[in-house]
Amino acid sequence: MSVPEPRPGASAVDATTLRLGYGTNGFANHRLDDALAVIADLGYDGVALTLDHDHLDPFAPGLTRRVAAVGRRLESLGLAVVIETGARYLLDPWQKHAPTLLHDDPTRRIEFLRRAVRIGADLGAEAVSFWAGVRPEAVSQQCAWDRLVAGCATVVDAADSAGVTVGFEPEPGMLVQDIADWRRLHAALGNPARFGITLDIGHCRCLEPWPVPQCVAEVADHLVNVQIDDMRRGVHEHLEFGVGEIDFPPVLAALAEAGYRGLVAVELPRDSHAAPDVAARSIEFLRAAAATSTSGDRRRQEVPAGVLCSASTDATDPATDRRVE
Image (tube, one colour):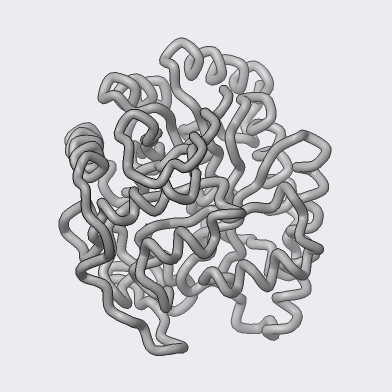
């Protein structure tokens, strides 16, 4: 599916051009077909599809046939798609997110990302998103960085061959955790055209040094994928809209001013137990925010340099993985 072209001079929130999606990692207790149907019935424009055991497992038999079936399903429901690769235990049943590109043997992660790129190409995905991972304790900072650059170069090569755009997501607590880190990685890779940024709006509130709308402006030229959720300063916990500290109308206005016309996908992976209700509330909230005329992030606070987000107290393993998704 093609992405609508930005209108010249677009600078205000327009609810008719805001393209909302919902992440399937927030529908973990649903069959994929059922999740897609609920998301479409609620009026979402697309889906952020996390490849996982029950949601288009890239390692299960019959992948070509299953991808084709999902493609037909998306088309019949009128849903655009981006591919997400943040499944927890898909690659290792004992360690969440392992192996990453930073581990001694990243082979399975690289193969996963290559498959994700191919799936993205087959589904006409607007982007394929991935991240660095947490640096293993036994791996030095420089070694981890070198491994990351090498792994990303391999993924970019695969994306170039497939004609797919990848969005690299800075994640709190990971080796690349903020916009500044992403810029360094982009430069180390030689500024490849197909290597964009996935921006999680909640992460901006969590740890970036700028107000959230400014974060959008900072990466406007490279923005290929947006995840949206509420969050509080210094705590990496994805919250329903209105529970955290983000003032959303200025954020949506910033996306419009940036000319971004990709999916803005709700990222609430811890709310699968109430997915239909949460998804319904989320789209109502975002539509109302898009229709509200305001400016500035009224609740912003500056973050001292070096401050990191902490995980919530019920994170799986805060010593090694600060993600609370």
